[in-house]
Length: 297
Image (cartoon, rainbow, N blue to C red; front, side, top):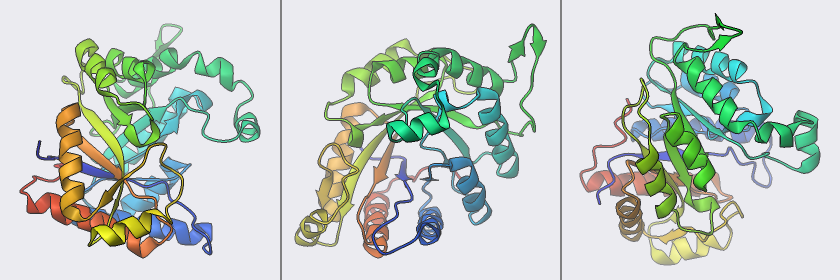
């Protein structure tokens, strides 16, 4: 299945020998390079801050969070932040949310000492956030609006690897991102259940699926294999490793198996130049096959 849309997942990694400022500059460089290929970029543990910075230095690509961990925050505050981003950069903002703690037990407690209770409220939190994006949220019968109101609302996505996250997405008429690189299990049944149970929303009448895949690409199979030995441990399953032709074939196979509208690629390799080159090779390979690109300009 030809890949019609593809995107970049950037965790803004701090590799050995660099400081956070350097890592953030690399995140901007990756987003600018991605824009050249019409790909959206995602990054950072405080995504709304970095997205404002990246949005100011790009012009066309969609940018978004991967992900805001909703149990840590009030939906109203999340909606305010992303409404502001969508006002600054109309038609370019994706709001991806998840329910993982996002760090160590002590870091989680420092951020939210009620995390376990709030995880149990995830269905309610997603419903509230969805209502805020539709401007249909009420408190004690009174309308509450997360301002500013953007010309186009952020597009809501649920990120996960199981039936729960897929169910939240389907129930609230949101897109679903299956984190294949984070899962030891295949997710075709999860994605199929999401499509089957999908309830259309005012902003998204049809289900949409992104599959996030770990990839390390180089000019030759030998170079790619050498690179993977140095890669970080972000992948719970082995990444796709190979030259552009091999990577394209494997990504198209995944797109077909999941009937995915979009493939999201994460390359975790402790060399910024080689990491950037990996994305460039994938982009060139995809577009050489006549893909329309991400279509999010």
